[in-house]
Image 1: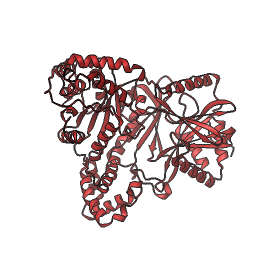
Image 2: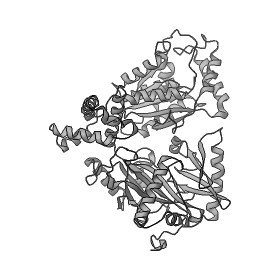
Image 3: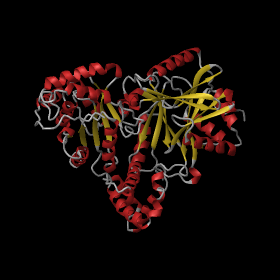
Length: 594
């Protein structure tokens, strides 16, 4: 069969307009990758005798409206071919979970999009892309952001295996993609390589083809029916899909699966929905992810690792307590069974054995899943300021606490005490015993501080969401921020437990040290990867403006928990915070800046 007969979609080289758009994008990517901005990461790798460049954007900025990034693509590679730079591989534009941002509320979706609404099962694996280089003679296989990594290498192995079984070659597939100037997007599900949360038996392992994207600046992606034809022709696994004429029909299926906690007898991570924006053919995508039982299974994995490391833990699901008691006994009596657990192996086997134990002691499968649904204590949220002295973090923290009843723990109350960092972490965990939201009021301007704080909290509250209140410090604005912070600290005088300019003659020097030590957020780094959301605040703006931004953002993030307060309520909370006079503490002048 000629490949032209596989699909009706006809793509080719970029038009002049598209090429001009790409050249502009390339300039912007390099500009945003400059050390002064560090908004985009640029990594160059060698592949098949040429350089391939990966462009990786700061994750939290995708949520900003309007998006300040040069491209909203997640997974973007460029290379030089025939003397010209081109897009070598392109993933989807970043898309969000239902209710994660205003444009993924069902009401917005119903008002601003049209069908067909295509729902595909979200497989639980790792992201793989493939495209054709050298006129289709070379097949490029990547992970989301890298070429020479184990995930990309395993993706290539599976690709060769699928193609061989279908009687096809990698050159045929590369040619197919190159002729259409397209990237194939897969999910690699292979428990023998890496266990995720949901189990894939041997017959279900491999590469699931779930998208084909045009290698262009703007997202152009094939309909799921066309993608399925390509998957079948080249021997890849086909994702399960549904199609509806209206958004409410798709929502009905999603709600049904949420209620049953299964789709046709199978636990799934969720769905991806594709549709079109009204008035255009522009594609619009969002996802529907299920907390239960997915997050409970994730909690079991974390709890097991904590027990293996003799670390404390807390639980969010009633059944986890049963699991923890059982797994402790298993570790004592059968330690060899857990030898590979920390290396992402053996999770499923342990879980199966617990299921068998649980059912043998009188619980039916229905009772088992009923217990899964009973979440203990609801969602926990840690609000973590990232700021420098004088930005207004305590004012904002106190005002938010006044408005919503959030727990508010100040590190200044533990300064000068033995193990002050540990006491700060313990105080936050204790505060979560009586509330769902706690503010960790500290500058958290150092990467290590953030990492140790988040690790301490999520070790015990594994499902705790972490939201950063981020006073961004652009390098070009550092002196202006320092001047503004000094002005604020001087104006407040003694209205602080510890940092009193009247008692600290060297306070200007200390504040300058904080500014110089400030480590910007990097959600892909080891220190910041646990952050779920970022609320960006203006270091030069006053507390009234920043409080309004924080309030609106939090109410959008947690619409079922937080109600937007009135203007008078916000003003009263701010006045309360500004008028508060803390008890002054006697401490030395040594302040942690690194």
